Image 1: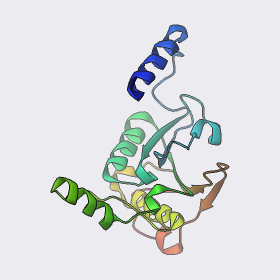
Image 2: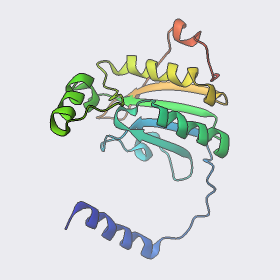
Image 3: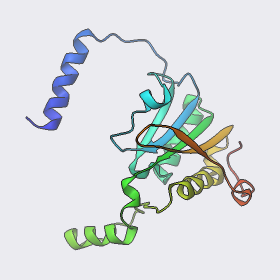
Image 4: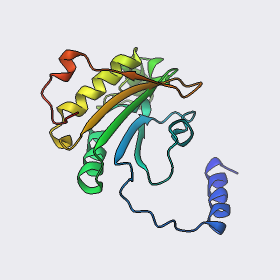
Amino acid sequence: MTACDEIVHRNELHVRDARDPGLPAQPSLRVAVVTCMDCRIDLGASLGLSTGEAHVIRNAGGAVTDDVIRSLAVSQRKLGTREVMLIHHTGCGMATFTEGEFKGELEAETGQRPSWSVETFADAEQDVRQCMARVRRSPFLGLTTSLRGFVADIGTGALTEVFETAADASAPTGARG
């Protein structure tokens, strides 16, 4: 049995007793959380989030990419979120290799070098600041009333807030907060 087969089986067991809770598509806390796809991160447990409370956007490293900006813009403009939380974590795999190394590996294997940025980083706090600046600079995220960044301890889930520098906070902004 493949992993996908196992997951489909689990879904079949789940839907036997599942009932539609009737939740709206708009998250009740009006917050969007951008974080890493790392399978060790359980946002429900570590942040106390329940179904229907927040939009959760995940990718490798929790990077604020063009696609994350797209998702945040839809979240804000069509579904009412106003706050953005960016959460990186300790022990992230994206800090264990470089952009050049990974692109080189892909090129050697496939004969093509990817055009997209891998978004590796050496310092999680600095990368959170960079991601906060990307949100701030986006003209599409002007409805943001609060933007906060954190690094989570992968072992305990404890959040350490990352504050923008004065230069970051005074940069041209599409987002307030």
